[in-house]
Length: 291
Image (cartoon, rainbow, N blue to C red):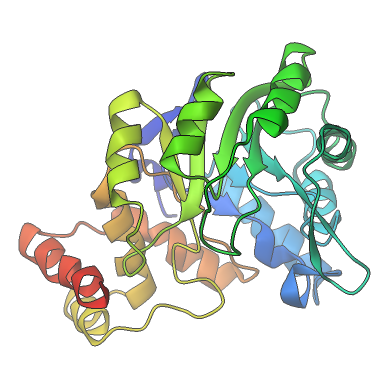
């Protein structure tokens, strides 16, 4: 069995979690909307992830909507004491599968209660405010009203810790003046490197950085260099991409998602992959070429 603890641990709020976790987004249907094609397979993936040592699952009630949280509850409730479930609020889904901003205090409060109900929890471990900028890239603007609303819910005991998703460095600083930020979840991978400075800044502060689309999202990373390195190491390109992220910074927490048991095991095996210095230098060139 793959030992995900080989990737080490990092603080997520008041607990240490293994750095290789699991993202539940792909458990919903096409376009992250509707039920999965195979519900039993989705349940099996969640249970296998936890059985393999994963103690950090990322989700949201707008995945589906409601679908992934209900699957998590069915598969894993009552939850292991060491399992951290991280969710996010700030959007809703339309009947046409559209993604719609839900950023008012009332909408954020409703989102928190939806997550509590569908996950079967009395308190959420971590709630990320999804800042509604571009689809995959943050844009500047004050988040004081939104983050204050979540801080109020935290004071009420409904949330243990707060984080941000799709946020800029300035927004992180603004949020920290309101309440502690324990993680930032932005678009980042071997090719998309815009957050390099932010990652280092957060590492110095002991704040976790959680890249979404760590493998390129719905368009997997493609690179001749990546494929060549993977072939030499006897690994898949995606395993090398995940191993590079683990090597990139100690505060990096990964949440690769899949609805396949085979791919889950491949992703988790990235914890066993050690990249030599010359390989890291070679992989660094991929991001530089894109820039």
